[in-house]
Length: 286
Ligand code: KPL
Image (cartoon, rainbow, N blue to C red):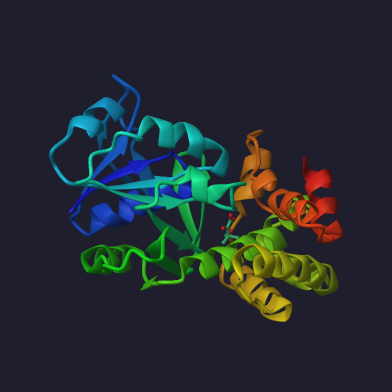
């Protein structure tokens, strides 16, 4: 299969390397005349060909375009790819949720939700926590299961599950990120170091607010206790990982707080729900 990876972040880079290790054809989307930077994993250097947005838009070669980007980069990217011909498949992966998402996302895109933990240390990529991934249509009424895609993603970065109810998985991932990422910044620590800090009560309050919002916005039932358990489980499995938010803060980049706890606080306020714990973290980290 042909793949085009959009985004220079740790997860997109990790996927690019892992797909290339599976003998897939992988290109990286770059600006005109810019080379694709090599990626390093386990002291090995991986080179990729570069493709510009203009080249991608007129390419006849069917490709899976994986946009592993920050939520705040999505609008600009979707504008750039608005004319993406139908032989290409767009797969989105970002932390958090956008306000009015259904109106902003192309209906025929797929979500790739992942709990793999990865960060960049200078040039080196570090796959610091084995997680799992789920794939599903943005519009659940789209029925065909892209079997080859799942098999290839599963081989590259296992396991990858087909999830017809991807929105449920996205809420769970949102909760995991809302419960882990801000605390790694506040305590300036790796994911695993959160486990001994006695954060369960605070996490349960955050999870309760997220669960109430998921019910009201999407009719999805999530048990707050299970969300805390899921977050603790991810923190355990990615114990050695530096969260994306901590990496952003250390690199002086904008964080995704507006699309995580900020999203929960804004949407809850609009619906008259209380989300004081998420509101507090949003304020603290903005
Ligand atoms: O998604 C992550 C992130 O850091 O943004 C987790 C799964 C928490 C891994 O660190």
